[in-house]
Length: 309
Length: 309
Image (cartoon, rainbow over all chains, first blue to last red; front, side):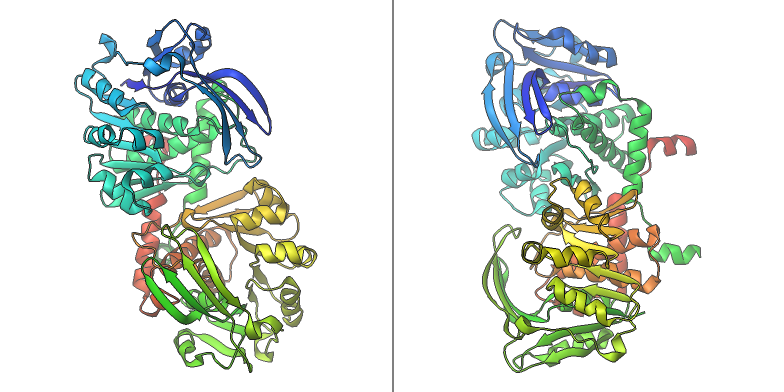
């Protein structure tokens, strides 16, 4: 089934130790969709200005993304410019211009309102509420957020949690939201406010899923060259939700696989600028990397070895 | 077979958000042995002053540690005092007094010289060389080090690598040693200088083993309460080496299990002050936590599910 994805559709100018990319496709909805469409169609809702190279999104369309919910307005598109440091773990934001995104009010097209899977990208929690108000009977709602909203619109964010089944945040955000440095306690605090599942993304250190009485850990894929880290978290979310939507299940064994598909798609995202790595990516490469994840984590206990001996 | 372990035998005074411990058993050789003796006997070589509560080490003796290589000298024992911050990921060193450890010159007792497994705790690389000079035919030498030696005695450390099969360091140390921010490249740089295996410890983020053409990742065990992080890395090394010595093998499947036993023992170490958590720990608890590690990381690919359907 399709996933409704509401988030930013942006232009990024990025400098890394390996090169520069100028005004390339970016934004949470774009990275999410580039990854998720490997598994399931995506309906995108967002806004761009009249400077947006809309035809460049044709790649996503060819993959099964429905772009009819992207509003095209007079004015400038959301623009972000950043520079990554030598170790790629830190970056400076050089410029942020919200443009038409500043007054974004998501309008969900009629055809998208029956969506059962919804991904609320990192936008104002008040708008995330408005999205859910327009969806008839969402079954699986996943949501991202950031420090800006945790500080600036905490009340709406906490009330939104009641409508969300999967919260996907990074470790600093989980700690800040729960005001608790211990991740296990922080995730319990969050889960007590609504989400059954909390996925904590930790960049190169992987990601951990906390559910009722169990947890699952997917490592970060060790890469020789992290070309451009932009969008890795959104690509993770895309792989995770895309896989889940393709199964229609939230069974633990599907959630585990979703974590691995998330980490896999996140690892591809950072191998090139923008969503470029996804252009030539095929199912076999994805399957091969998933297999590598398994080889990187699978073991038998000595009790098992003894039993089978 | 026994493991020869050379390292510090110290007294620690520790403050954490949960309490205080004054002049309790510490040092790399003590944490290593508390964990390793779960799997295999350990022969400890170190030095203490005449202020050391030597009888407190009886616990290790009862577990199979041979303390006859611990020299007892006039003077003060190695003493470290530290305070952990609220989030337990950072700490201030309040005091370090090397005492008799400052002039430590490891003398390997005759009975220990036939050791086949050797763990060189974090001491001056010149002394680590001297240890190996005294061991007849070591088969598996593992080694730890720190920023102090990477900066201060780099030449000896790099030459030591030729005599080491397993280097165990944290991520910052691996990057510093190789002068390379990318961990995969850093570990290759290290492996090109001797060690077949590099184990990179990342604290709460787990640990990753790099070998020839493959890698294995063990997550950190998510704990509600990290009571005192002191010694976690040494307990990891103890679990890792203890398990390997008990098998006599460096086969990939044993190395994988060793990583999990390492992470398991590291996770127990932080549940109490000093080596106290190991006092009441039994084999069943260890096996249960290893099983939890497996549940936290095991998954089947969708291709496998499809094949079996």
